Every structure is written in structure tokens, then in C-alpha cells.
Image (cartoon, rainbow, N blue to C red):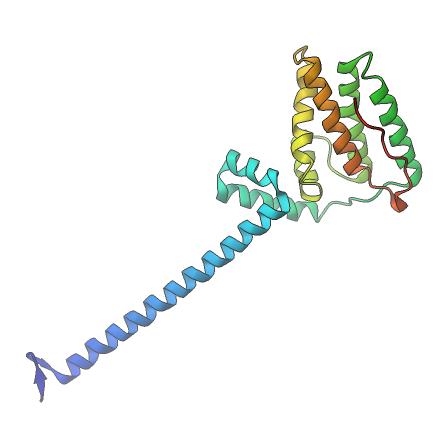
Length: 201
């Protein structure tokens, strides 16, 4: 039987076949990794676009992989909620309550901020968001209103500091402005015929 370098023909054929199979396997693995990387990049880009600053905050807190799993889970949970718009009567009631709360700020900033915190929770509850636990509510809100949930967290923290007797008048003023942005965002009324809240101090 013919040999090359001391190896028989069938042995060379076997070696060449093994090399070819190896190359094919490497190409398949490379393509698979590339496709997986593309899906991961697409997922990351989609979550970053959808959640905005909340994406960055969650990544800072949990790391990228855990954060993206968390945000995906939030989106799935949000799909199970019965979130709905307010009736025009409800919208008018809450708009008037906001105007009264805001007017109170001049004489009693701390009381007004606490009232604003409660009012936002009332509106969220009326719309079908979970409110028993602040973080659960904030996570649910982040799916539909990702641009204001950062303000919601900051304003809520300011309200809690105020209740402990900490925080300056400037902190309270900023919290009130944040609450106004949140309130305006979440006051979703069927027909959009509710009176808009007036500008915060």
C-alpha cells in the first residue's frame, strides 16, 4: 500500500477528515457565539432604550447580567397587571388634590412633600399599580414610565428624610418638583380631559 512519510494512504485520509471536521466544528462554534453575542447586544440595546436611566441604575446596583434579568422579569410582571387610565372624574379629583398639596408647600414644605408622596401612591393604586411596597411599585412604574422613575425614587427618599426631620428646604423644593413631574406623567385620564396640575414652586 502506498505511503507518505511512513503513513499509509488511509491514515492520511483519516487525518484530513479529522482536520476538516475540526475546522467545520470551529466554524459552527464561532458562528454560534457570534449569533449569541448579537442576540445579547440586541437585548442589551433594547433594555437600555426601554428603561433609560433606570437601566444604568440597575446595572450599577446588580451588575449587567443580573440587572438585565431583573428588567426582563419586571416587563413580564407588568404584563400581568391591570393598569388602566383614570376616569375624568378621578382625574379631576386628583388634579384638585395636587393643586391643594402644592399650595401647602409655601407654609409647610415638609407636610406638602409628604402629602405629594401619598397622593402619587393613591394615583398609582387607582391606576392598578402595586403600592403595598415602594420598591415593587417603583419597579412596576419603571416599565411604563422609565423616564420618571428615577425622579420617583429621589423624591420618595427626600420625603422619608423629611419625615425623620432631616433634609433642607431646598431638598424639599426639589422633591416637590420631582413629584410634579411624576404626577403629570402618571395622571393618565381617558379622553385626557383632566385639568393639568399647576407648576410646582
